[in-house]
Length: 127
Image 1 (cartoon, rainbow, N blue to C red):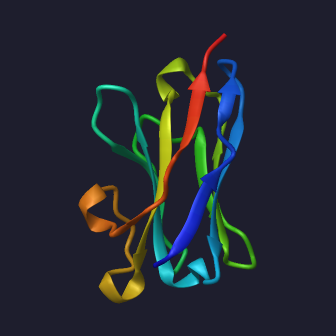
Image 2: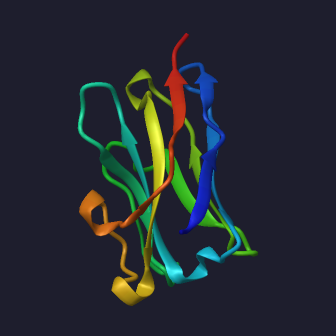
């Protein structure tokens, strides 16, 4: 069973920034495509960023493009989601999800494409 955890969530004022981390324990994220998703109360889970296993492809939906950035650390055990210019509508539980390159290392914004999910971290944007 893969062990990884999200962290970095919290309460931030509109216009502020947060950096979320998705950290692996006992394995490298280098062979995985990573997706960041969020789910607000009463809404479906939606993708906000993804990075292919090769790091060559990164995708963001229009709702966060220019504000969110996904990246990996050099040690390949942590993937970050840097969020800036946060808005109240960004309030949600944020999840990272993994898919091994053997099953497709491409970037995907669909929840069904990821077999492994973290527990999530709450992000609240409010004044």
